[in-house]
Length: 415
Image (tube, rainbow, N blue to C red):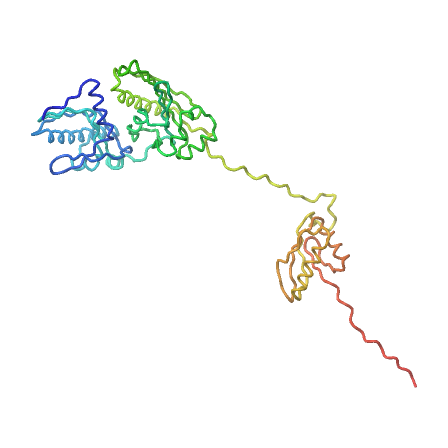
């Protein structure tokens, strides 16, 4: 099989095209290595730049052996990085932990395989093997809104851009920044527009961040300057943070031709992530307190009227203006209850009169709302013929008994 050699800018672009698949997943088969569809491995440990050079009986076997060797080398590098020393594991154990292989560059010959690879390790399995907790200290969730300037036009999520693709390719599993990456579909093109970058209003930003369960926003910006069609490209990268569009850092990169634009953007993403992580360590990515949840205003307490010393009368300290008064009254029948309530409601100053405890044939209880002193109600009831017993806000009322019927005496005259 002739060797597929990548060199120069074309080689970089081809290598990047292989890397954009998101990692080639390994699956063991009887006849060698099978390439399955990639999956989301953003939560994996990534070890890049692993160099391999192996020979075998044919090209496919050489490639398979090269990937196996990359697993071993990648595990040693990861173990040293996480403080586990340079431990070694069997190939079967590594197969259970490796979630993908990223082809950064490769050259394939009839019996030889030379490549620079990246290895993705499952964070949960590798962390448990090395005694490292899978939960790491990360930032608050940060909404990512990449903005690209190209040809004088500023674009965010209004349409798909190379800058957006570069951030989607970048794996953030090893980053201390918790990026929230919108899919770029549905309402994203309406909510996350380029004009949103210069809107400082906290209310609207708070509504947007709530939609994506984020605490703040990061705005990485790239401005692309093309010298001529297909010629050199200069990219000016800016790391911005927050709704105030605060600039943290800025740098420039350059590639020799237009085919290497993805390489330029991928390198820019990596450097911007390093800048954001450094800013996080320095305490510069603290979420804006103005974006925190604002609850409804607390109700204003209504002042309670209290009796003044001038209105208080000796021996009646319980009297309160506008108080609720409890009346006990005789209720031999339903008609007597209705008559008592009607009579009390007709008394001036009574706002309400409701029987709260009914006892037909006994004594019922009525709650009366009165807008003056209870002593005034007592006087009014007595003037209307009621007999009132008690004081303060608890009174017992009843009607006076009719006088007994006495038969007239017979006139007896003596004979």
